[in-house]
Amino acid sequence: MANSKPTENEETDEREEELSEAQINELKIAFEVFDKDGNGFISSKELGAVMRSLGQNPTDTELHAMINEADINGDGLVNFEDFMLLMTQRLKVLDRDEGIREAFRAFDKEDKGSFDVAELRYVLSNIQEFIDIPKHEVEEICKEADITGSGTLNFEEFALLFET
Image: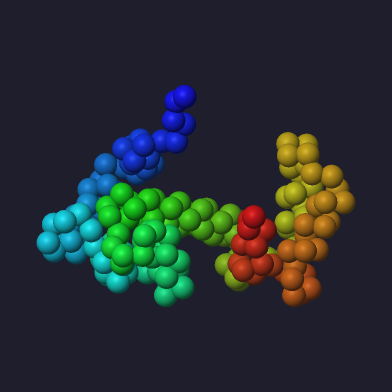
């Protein structure tokens, strides 16, 4: 019976396909700077420093979650493949967040930091034929999005629309 689980090399290849060659090289260089003895591992404590050297600024909570995810056996060490996986996931989240910010800016034409819920309602109503949202769901989405009941959506309220 064939093993359906991808090998470590196949998983690394998939991760590398998600990153550009320049991104992979940047990750390798940063990793190697902190892998002082060249054994292919950095300490989980150094993970934050490596990420900051790459221009990433994870919160302590985010960093703790990443360390727990990467340091599977609890030895305090992270190998390059696990580091690359973490960074690929983080870059995807950052890309997604930037997409949400761009969408928000499209609604917030006056750059006030908020926009009228009516604008969201209008857009959703006009794209109904393409995404098949019943009218009552458009109203429900708009009502739930306006957490404060102010009739406007700030970025935080808007971003919650994209949470799963």
